Image (cartoon, rainbow, N blue to C red; front, side):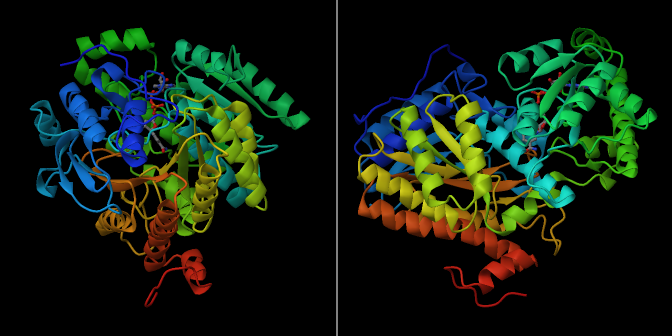
Length: 553
Ligand code: NAD
């Protein structure tokens, strides 16, 4: 049952619970449902399809009550978005443990899972929705920025996309980050969307610089900016299948090609050629079978064009939307010649324990985040890429809900950043404690053969021991809350992943926990990748990082 109510995290230094650990969980649960943050807060949906923060409003209220009552040596148990009780544990134990959407593997199909969900027996928690550490679009912006930067380094031997241009499509919730991530990397980009309102929204929000009236005009603007060496993002109204085909026929060769339409969803996510959003809706209702057939035909047409761009020399990749899978289902047998973005560009980062690390100012004060930005720039100033991101983020990112910052930080850097933050809380340089966490899409915390663990060197794509070890290790190391989820990112049956949040309250105890958790968590990622045969991970271990490894291949 849905209910209209506005939830917003408390701000300031006053506690509503018996300690900052419980308070942090309370504030971040509420923050996930803040209308500035959540996609559909009335239905408790935070992001990513039906990724929820709690199973029902009754469960939400009970979680809030229990967190307020919870003592600092007790642990609250959340089972698929429902609080099932609390136990006396220890001061160093997590205050909350969360397990969402687990289902015995033989039953782990969409049909069975969603039937159980309709019966109210489980909840889909996506990655950071049900684990209470979603921070809005800054996350996808930074991930896209990082992917394009890694691509520039690997493919063009450059620290930026200066002088290069990107062709992509889809300006929706996630895909809308592409234009800004491109210009933040100093590149030029043309972005196609079939929906005028999406283009208008991205221009209004300053994620997209301008709209061209035709693909020809977009190409002219692109050339003008490339010749001046300036970044720009250009939107074009149209269907990706039609316009990719047209560009391939014109023998235009973009430097980079991808797609972020919601092609994973054959019903709503990909509009077939020749239709607008409105006419597609009528078509879908009147003849669903023919509709699906035409969706497949368009996806195949677009994917064929991408393969031609690849032959001409473009760097192409699948951006986690299952375009390749759909094209293959539609009969294009060589669709998987397009690499996935993780094996192509992110794996090198994962193998050194790098991934989307984040922190949230529980005070609600923007200045706390800006002060931490400055301290990190001072202490980690040698990392020019990190400094560049922090500067750009301050200038371009609008906070949603509690102010937060995300950055890709590697093994070693995460512990340093955690300690810097804890010292700042202790010294009163920020106004309240800070919650430190990360996405489940990370180095040692996810098994997802269509995305994060696609094409592992040793074939261990589907081995799901690692996220479970990760959660257990973070729990015994002193994380404030720990979560294990199923199905985030790539859907039911396709992934198992884990996460944690750790509160820096300035205390000596928090310092010890930071040293343990922020060493163990990315350290496990390094070990996981060394075990799979990645040289960068083995080199890091050989250099004597702070964990023991009895052997590596
Ligand atoms: P969305 O539904 O919000 O947006 C999709 C956009 O594509 C819409 O603006 C729509 O108008 C446009 N579109 C649909 N068909 C089109 C066509 N034929 N030509 C041009 N435009 C078309 O989806 P989203 O949240 O932006 O997610 C996009 C995809 O990215 C999804 O498949 C999602 O699962 C995937 N995803 C990937 C990552 C990642 O890490 N790489 C993360 C999250 C989501």
